Amino acid sequence: MNFLKVDTIENAREKLLKVTPKLKIENISIHNLLGRIVAEDIISNENIPYFRRSIVDGYAVISEDTEKSSKNFPTFIENIGYIDIGTITNINLEKNKCCYVYTGSMVPNGADSVVMVENTEKIDKKIAIYKKTSKNENIVNIGDDVKINEIVIKKGTKISEKHIGLLMALGIMQVSVYVPLNISIISTGEELVNPQKEAINGKIRDINTYSLKSFSEKNYYNVITTSLICDNSDLEEKIESLKTSDIIIISGGSSKGLKDNSLEIVQKTTNNGVFTYGLALKPGKPTIISYDEISDTIICCLPGNPVSSLVVFEMLFSWLSLQITNTKKQFPIYANITQDVFSDKGKLTVYPCRLIQENVSYKAEPIFAKSAFISSLSNADGYFIINAGESIKKGNFVSVILL
Image 1 (cartoon, rainbow, N blue to C red):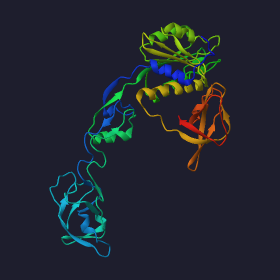
Image 2 (image 1 turned 60 degrees about the vertical axis):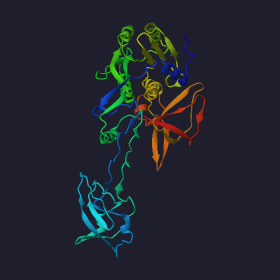
Image 3 (image 1 turned 90 degrees about the vertical axis):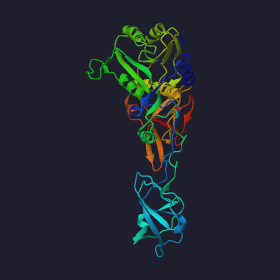
Image 4 (image 1 turned 90 degrees about the horizontal axis):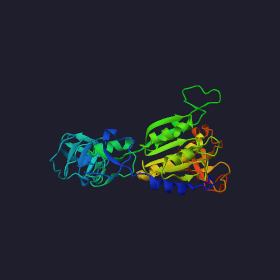
């Protein structure tokens, strides 16, 4: 296969999406729901609130009765009782009558507003009203918060803490969610050692295993295993053992060096073979994507350089997760670039950047570093993309995707 005949990101994504299995759906308890992605619209089965309630302590009144009320000339209205919180009332309020309510109390029939207790004074059996009220003032009506049959959480939403209270309020205790794809991660390289060990004699600590695991979990994949292989003669056997995964990610060995033999091994272990060998992307050109139809497994070899590896993962598999879960892409930050930047001819270029806030706007400061420098990503707030052969002048806007 000709390494120079590379795919664009769009072509690679299209091929990848075609062989990606459809996500399964499961029903889970609300107690285990955080971080899961909703597989169908969640629809309210009731109104919230289902009764009219007061949002202040005060007196339920007919607003017309308070029309002439003021600090100097109060209106005097007869109090006929009170309504406690969490109780039903059969009171039907008539003209020139009022009823004391607490915050959260049911508002009686006939009343159309509530006067805050601070604007009243009790004088014998009468209540002096010192402020005019308008219709529906200090009242939440039936369905003002949530209406019955309303879509309250849309399909593709990742559940966070803010959704739990709403579901509890509606009594929804089971939710249909997508089952994440299973992913296995293999890092390869004779020079790699476990991060817990000392890096000496030309060895370096394994970065990609743990970075790719973190990126995978952030993007709704279930990481079932990670492996470090220092001898590529073991790679074929390891791939075969992991074909129960939906996706196998391999970092390293995807280029054209003397010891880079991932292409040969992947071709042997997939009956459909390689469908992408090289991306028109900087960093990240040496990328291999293949598919084994027998096991229904995607196998992708990423560059060994840490930044290149994570950039390709972000551009392919973070994107893929959004597609298969129907999740909306996060809103970018628009920022003024701090210096001229350009893209190589024929290559989409990804630039990590820092964001600098100035009043209500942002500036994007590109981070220029080699693809082996993991600090370029750890110091970045996000990244922006420049199309092949294009340039952006200092001061122009770029669209920054947050990391």
